[in-house]
Amino acid sequence: MNTVSLRTRKRSRRGAAAVESAFVLFPVILLILGIMEYSRYVMMIQLVNNAAREGCRYAITHLVPVTIGSTTYGGTTTDVTNKINSYMAGQSLSGQTVTVFASNSLGTTNLGTWTDASPGESICVRITGNYVVTLTALLKLPSTISVTANAVMDVESP
Image 1 (cartoon, rainbow, N blue to C red):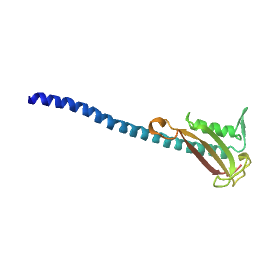
Image 2 (cartoon, rainbow, N blue to C red):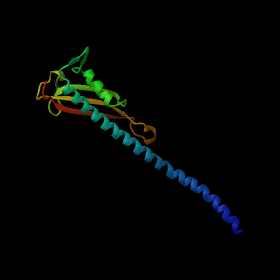
Image 3 (cartoon, helix red, strand yellow):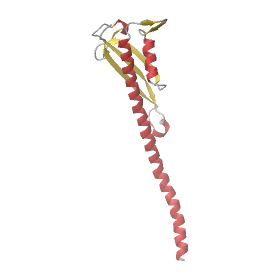
Image 4 (cartoon, one colour):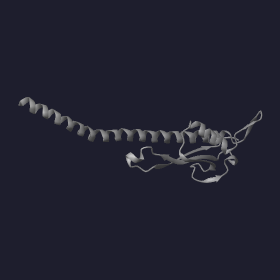
């Protein structure tokens, strides 16, 4: 009789272990996925900030268009945008827009066309868009997070 009750106790304990595992496993998986999503968000913020800085650097060094052979380099916002897109290596924000303009030293005031900036003035590159959260349904987060990156650099010489 002792061995029969031991066997039934083990069998009923096996079911309890499965239920306990289900209760613990779900939050742990959500925690791991949340950490991965947050890491992806931080990576995207860094990528956008670095791309804005590289675009601004390109803009201040290519104020005056240069023609080599039959190809003209610099002097257009499209060239700056292409530089930013190539730096981002296929990653982008949803609804991403790139704005390049002459600005004050803080990048808060649009002073006009960036190609008209003279030495001592600043050029600002602003990238705006929305980061799309992958795990919205599981984590109950908003579907997008607004992201803005600014880079401001001074023009040194024409």
